[in-house]
Picture 1 (tube, one colour):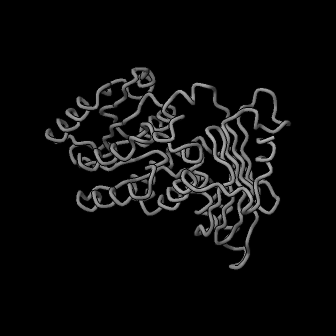
Picture 2: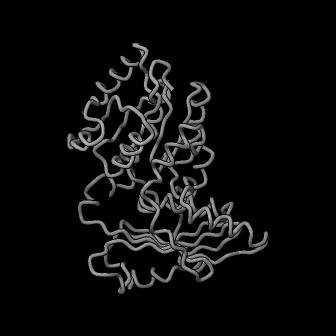
Amino acid sequence: MNSANSKPLFALAGVAGYVAPRHLRAIKEVGGELKAVLDPADAVGILDSYFPESRYFAEFERFDRYIDKLRRAGEKIDYLSICSPNYLHDAHVRFALRSDANAICEKPLVLNPWNIDGLAEIEASTGRRVNTILQLRLHPAIASLRERVNNSGGDRIHDVDLAYVTSRGSWYHMSWKGDDQKSGGIATNIGVHFFDMLSFVFGKLKRNIVHHRAMDCAAGYLEYEKARVRWFLSINRTDLPAETPLGQTTFRSITLDGEEIEFSAGFTDLHTLSYREILNGNGFTLNDVRPSIETVAHIRKAELRPRDGEAHPFLKSALS
């Protein structure tokens, strides 16, 4: 923490983005002070609800200059929170470390495993730390599931179905999220935290088979040390189950050996909890995030093998 200030000092990149409000709230609730924010989009009025005195920059060069000015004045930021588009995460984490600040980065930390190697080198040379948001690991239901699996016997292999449908309009494909080079594709952009959760609960990944991969939908089969997993991800509202209540645009389901695991509630405070852990030196590290980044990078490039491994039941409906 900055020795000249009892509060941890923050800056934030990507303040106009979808996930930024969760970070603004977390910074506020852990008693932090937000010194500066960056976003080329100027729809940043939400700052008035959290940090109206924070300096706003639309251009990275001016943001960079101000962060350096704070450092030279003895008010260097302690943490740069990164909520920018996925393809910018690597560069913004590097900027944080080279500005003598720690990084707090939204998922996905990076798009490719070799980016993690580069960040590890900069961590070592700067003495700063990369923290990544893996909020599902902090969810009480997921922690309970992990304990249950660990207590079920060393040779028990569970059968798991994971389905996540989160409807998005045509804007999605016109934005950076619809560009695989910038978002990493569906599995990376909307699924990486689920793949992290699976490795966290079920251990090392042994097989990674991709059955289907398109702009709006992906599906496959995974084998972990303690589970066989059929997964399905979609942003197409036509993939919502027929029984979905009218007006509901999202469906999320995880079953373990045929039993539904309920974890819809309890998400509200997970970013704040993540920040508290980070400030206490217990944030999730580069090593923690590597398995999920390796998983989604493989899904992005792998040859499709529709006949290898059992497909998720939703895939048949999606292709019909």
